[in-house]
Image (cartoon, rainbow, N blue to C red):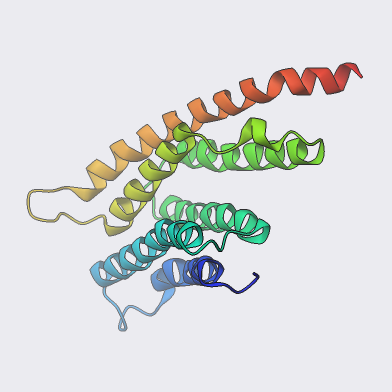
Length: 191
C-alpha cells in the first residue's frame, strides 16, 4: 500500500512544500511580490486540501495503511514548519509563535514515537483538540502568506489572530497529550 491513492496525495503534499517556499526566491521579473504571495497561498491551500481528501479516500476505499498513518502527520508537520520558516523570514509571524508551534510538533512527535515503542500509542492518539489546532494553522498560514488586503478583508490581521489562536491551541493540545501520557511515563520510570 506504499503507493495507493491516499499515499500518493500525501506524497504530492510533501512535493508541494518546495513550491510554497521556492516561489519567494524566484527572480522579481518572473513574479511580482503580490504574485508570489498569491502563488504561495494557492500552493499551500492545495496541499492543505489534499490532507482532508487523502484521509477521506483512505477510509472510503479501505486503503488505510500503517505507512499512510505515519506519512500523513509527517507531511503536515513539514508543510507547517516550512511555511512558518518562510513567514518568519518575511517578518509575518513572531518567532515565539513559530517556536511554540514547531517545538510542540517535535515534542509530541517524540512522545508518540516513544509511546508506540512501549505499546501505548493509543493513549496519545490524535484528539479533537489536535484537529482543531491543525485547522487553525491551515487557515492562518495561507492568510499570512497572502498578506495583502483583499477588499475590506485584511488577511494578514485575520491570519495573525488565527496563528495566535493556533499557538494557544498548540500549547493546550500539548498539555492534553502530556497529561494523558504522564501516568504511563511515571509507571515506566518507576519500573
